[in-house]
Amino acid sequence: MQQRLAHGEAAALGELYDRFASLVHGLAHRVLDDEEAADRVTRDVFGYVWEHPDAYDPREGPLRSWIADVTHRQAVARLRRAESDGEADPEEIDERVRTASAAARADYIVTSMPASLREALDLAYSRRLDYRRAAAGLGVTEDEARRRLRLGLQLLSTAHQGPRRPVGGGPR
Image (tube, rainbow, N blue to C red; front, side, top):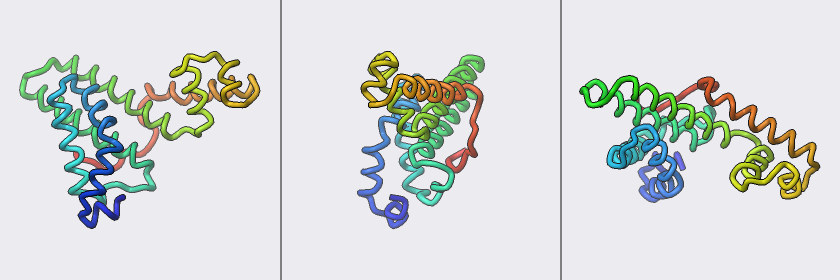
């Protein structure tokens, strides 16, 4: 994908947009709480990706995480500009940035955790199954299901502690 973008292949940008537009827009909206501003950030993020395909370094993590990081930076920058223009309350902005940062870290953690933990969390929380039914759905013992849920929740609890990975690339 990165090589295709570097060669100016518009279809690659379209594929990337199809894959990540809802993530970008959702994260931007979470930070900005404004549909029009989230639309603008979405355009800005994909414009940045198109103009700087080499800014993504696969050694720093998945493409999804990098795009989420670029989005977060763009949305926070837009929020900070609104603050400096006197359009927003600084305390409200700080709280929105903290909330969005934790959400972005949680997304990174979930996408980075082993599939076995992600599947257990999905069954327990998205589908509202208890650990016994989650174990049956996963085809594992109840003890193994409890272990996976515990580990997944422990990983997710770190989302509120700040980033634990190097943050790379993206507009500042």
